[in-house]
Length: 519
Image (tube, rainbow, N blue to C red):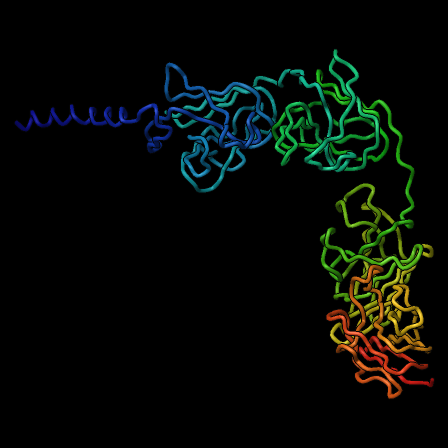
């Protein structure tokens, strides 16, 4: 009897294993078994910018299951330079994936660096990295948990069919438009060629064709064969075009007027003609910005603007923190933008403090120039003046930020003043820099006034110098309250007795003194 049971047990155990395997029906996408046993799935996909369908989890590239071996899946076709992994189901980033054994496991002409597979749900997002674009055969063996990759060579050039061609990008007239591209002229059918004649700025672009949906930048686009392909008067650094895949753009490194021929049959771009832009004079800039720790930090877009107060003259009046800064003509582009104008100190860490600026020279340059910065040694309110004609900078320390107001000008504006509510106002005279004082003497009528300063805009917006309370009285007794306020409620001084007055404003102490001189 014991012998019979022993033989029966031996017979049943294999049957249990077979039944367990049979329970994995083909119509189920996932059935994960530990790595000592085969992984049986009905479908297998791949996603990533290395694959034909990119990072679309809803429409991934499907592999082919071997008709004679249900544990073998293959893919034959093009892989782009980029990353990839294998989901077991569509439409769910949280589902089970087949991951690379380590992040960045390379696939290239030598095959795959490590053959192992890591099947799991969640955890580290370890992907394969394709470093050589071309035609491959990928084989996933789910019985042995191995991936093999066979490189079969570069992809044969397949002509791109399109009735139209254009481009978008910050190098182009259209910019990064999601509405309309700058379109080319079709100049040949065989080979299929389009020509663009016009200006390009330094920057990037990619191509639009019949298959491109611009709305929300949906694409796909015709892209450069790899990252950082440059275009200039010498031509393009590498020929080739990809439809979709990694978002590699062409980079224009030389601004000017171009004649470009785009060949969709042979995937080439020819620079047929080029005229460089006339050299610009950086000292003719219409805008100026302060960038650095002394201002708002090193974000180009958030740099502090100067105010243009005259031809070739700029002023910044406000707070400076301790730290370094340099100047730039625009608050666009990057630190290595070729045609971006920068303005530097004559030597690194040129000091700015209570005594002013150590050396008053300003040096124009570009991103390749010596990166000499000014260094603010005492925090507070300052008035910086840049003269683009003389290439000079001046720095005046006004006082602590909590107890002073920085300005390079003061103008009386209001119906009590000689110029009324004209924004040009009645100019006060700068009497001293330390303390920062402005004075004026003249006739005031009955009425109201406030004071325009550097932070006041010509459309009456911005911050004004104002009375501490509404209708602060001015008469033969002088002024009711000698405090001043920058911004806030639109409180004005109210003259109740017409006559000749002397007004002195001390911006270093936030005080105003008004005395009645006579009728």
